[in-house]
Image (tube, rainbow, N blue to C red; front, side, top):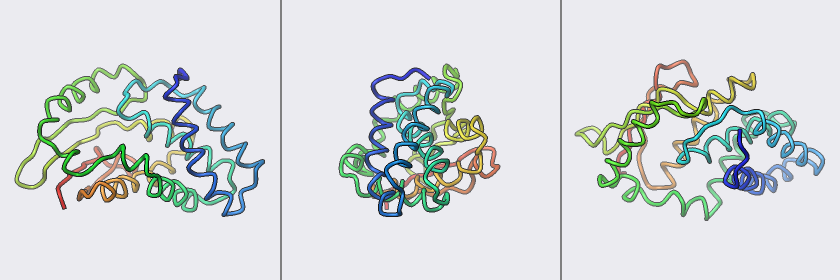
Length: 200
């Protein structure tokens, strides 16, 4: 994968956000250095994903893989590190915005264009998505048919880790003040990840 500034920045961001919590769990400086080096090594060999909307998610997935290889903690403990880092980071929360902003129907044309572009599969590890506009049951829906995090986990021989990061979608929805309903995910063997968002 090409190491652009955004790729580099997101790797540094997740490392900076997580290292305090990791240190509190007894992860020493040597292991912290190995986590970041492993993250960089995975980035270097990762198949490209060219979807700027989801580059942060892809980098988070790669960092999570590196944590599980080098921290000495369980996947559940490493998930808690990622979740706490996101919940307690004001910059990340500001970037996410509010549910009202996220569910604004004026964004639908742009999202439909994004969905169409995703089906061209210009990057091997991109997400592929269908966008479902507002209806009686929800305000915004997504059916993800392919997932970059599932793909990088499979490429790295640790597909079982992908399901942990699926849980973050609920955390992020809650941070925005949105309600998320989902019945199936690719990480757990489903045909799609069926996201259905509504205002709380």
